[in-house]
Image 1 (cartoon, rainbow, N blue to C red):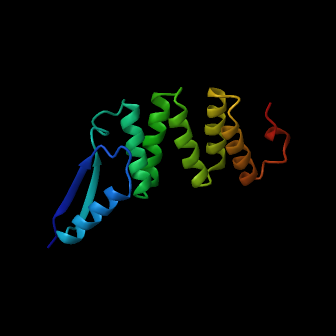
Image 2: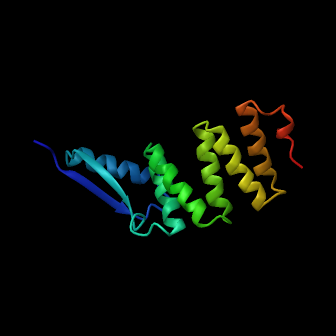
Image 3: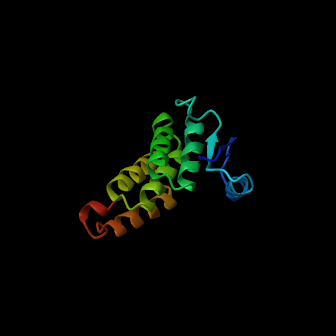
Length: 141
């Protein structure tokens, strides 16, 4: 016999340890099969960049790589001038060592803010990690 499933909804703005701890305690106390976290309106409003961003962070926190990428990429696509959304996608690709994607994403960041030393350092780190640090393409004015 299957146990009940719990649904834990909220804005998760942003998701944090307290959300995860609460879900875990509900799962234990109620002996649930699982607890599903549902970010408010994120799936109902796929064209809302902020909600997609929060959904992406939630999915990342839960270890759902594909769902996280889909939502973070949607946020970056919906608001291409948002350095925050581009940064989240860049760091996501860096974390999973997806170097070509990370390089393209950090280049979009540098196109938004060419003189940003943090973005330049992230780019250097990505190029170094991908083995491109000593190639002519690694130089950027």
